[in-house]
Amino acid sequence: MSEATNPLGAFLQARRALVTPEAAGIPAVGVRRVPGLRREEVAMLAGISADYYLRLERGRDRNPSAQVLESIARVLQLDDDHTAHMMSLVTEGPRRRRRRRKETVPPGALKLLDSMVQPAFIEGRYFDILAANALARALSPRLAPGGNQLRDQFLDPGQQEFHPEWESMTECFVGNLRQAVGTDIDDPRFIELIGELSLASPRFRQLWARHDVRAQTGAPIKMNHPQVGEITLNRERLTINGTDDVMLVVYHPDAGSADADKLALLDSAGLPTRAAGSEVRPV
Image (cartoon, rainbow, N blue to C red; front, side, top):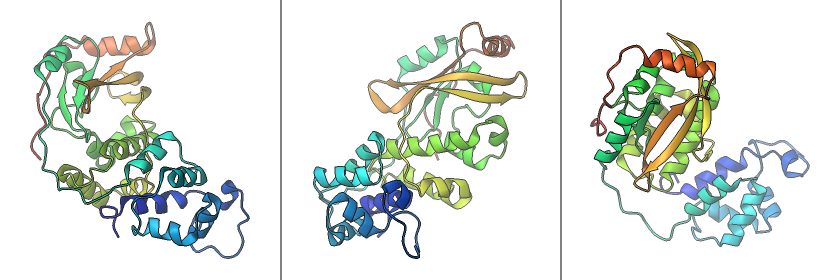
């Protein structure tokens, strides 16, 4: 079965491949044909039968108890984000196919964006740029309405030079995407984007196969800007109207730092101040 028809099984298989016998505290005996733990080893350590665990991976049992899942999470060394994601993959019936949703930005959020003195933009569930102020676009032309941050990171070679910590940044994006999409893997926009990236980017295929899940948190972002050189800004993500589908992202420097001076230099370049764009460009 594919990930679309058996998401729990795909997740379990990917995550047990990342746990070595040594990390699990068992001897690595014999020739191992696959990386990580064997199914029977996961079952033994979780205190369930090997046959039952096999049924879980193959999608023959889709309603395991919370106790069973917590035991498996312990064996697979899952953190809270991964455990919550695994729990969400347990379904009781088929899902109805979703229609493509058009993401829009509330007028009040656009007014807020216009008034901000820091680089800021509004992104959709799949990291589409829905709106951006002038300073965000001065920081990176890629932060313009109609763009998509996932496409930029994985398909534009220039992003590796622009982001010195590109590898960790791509890991973060993919883990964030896993958490954002949850079980909505039948969303047409998701299917289209994952298909495009999987075909075009070996790096994306590698990371997507790991089934990493990571919550979005504030973090410093380092950039090599062509005009002001290396600059590090703090990134904050704030929900708009209480939903995680549309987020306000703000970059801000430490007060009194050289990074603040560099950002002020960009801001003094006489760029227009009005935020651009109010909804995602059709794709």
